[in-house]
Length: 112
Figure 1 (cartoon, rainbow, N blue to C red):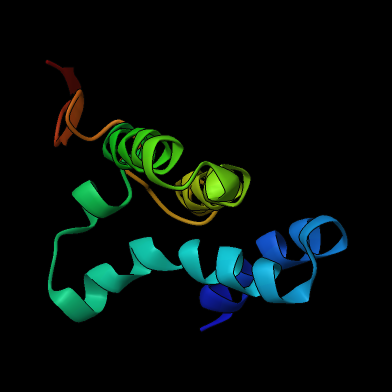
Figure 2: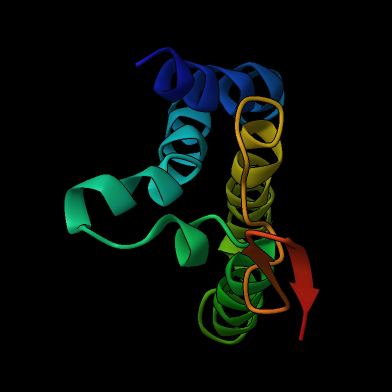
């Protein structure tokens, strides 16, 4: 539970002075998305991989720039908050941030 609070409050504290409280809460909720792997029974590797999250963010930013350009800034900040989640997890446990590129094995790391 403390990790969820940390993942919520750090983006909230950083974005609230700039975006306002409502938008900052939305950004903070976006940063909690990688932790849904527990509820959806998804392995932690894809949900905490910066490579896969970056692909999702790039698609979201591209689509938003085409469909609703006025929300592009908010989506960009949300994507930064989403990408900060695995980086914050690096300080507490092993986090597979380069999941499709690097696999952890018993004897060490294997680069594909």
